[in-house]
Length: 326
Image (cartoon, rainbow, N blue to C red):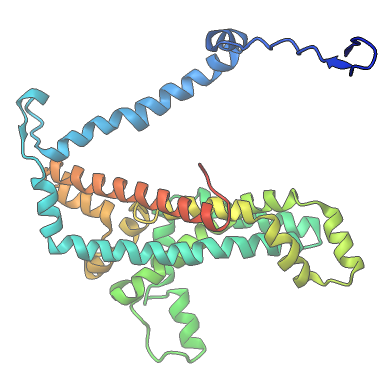
């Protein structure tokens, strides 16, 4: 700081020199400095573009009467005809009902159960027993749905199925129940199967979030006389609130695009009105009978609705809990 003094009786004027301006780095200079990081990420960017963005070009089939034998310029454009046919098909609304029903059941139970399971594992004191339970719980995630479908079908069979045998031995029922032949049981069977298969795997991320909570908070709460349930309610759950919010937003985004593996493996002709979901509908009425444009319209509808649900859930979460993914 430099102080300049004028004539006697006048005030002093202080002059503070301005700091030198920082030179802004250009985009190309940053790329050159971090060229190895960009080169390492390049294969993943190419993979993302090829498998996630390039296929969007195929959406043009939804506005054509697509014929594989013709080139793109020779295809007949039909505008919104495929979407009109889709929304006028009564089967579509039946399939949409099945999709939303199984999605909501999976969202409620398949989202809450892993949280409670992660909290339960965190409360276990024996490290060996804790690791054993965790390992056993996430092993079903690596089992194919083909195998899981066979296991579930055998367990629910009326001919030696363990579920019917147990219910009969406890005198809860008088005769075996044909679980796989009655549509009213199908949604519950799919939801329970998915919970058994994915709970352990989904709980891993919650366990990682719980590990990041400061242990001094638990020690301070024990000094104040808080029990385990009070610690869970006031420390553990608030500590993983951000993780819960992010995963909930992503789950809502996949509410209508739930895939078809579970339903395909567990379905049969007797429960088709309860087992068919949008992806199976696109497969059966699009690809199997060569209505490629109609199948593309179904898939496009699913993708657009999923994006709308994701943005809506993100906006609501951002306003209510200040948590969001973008």
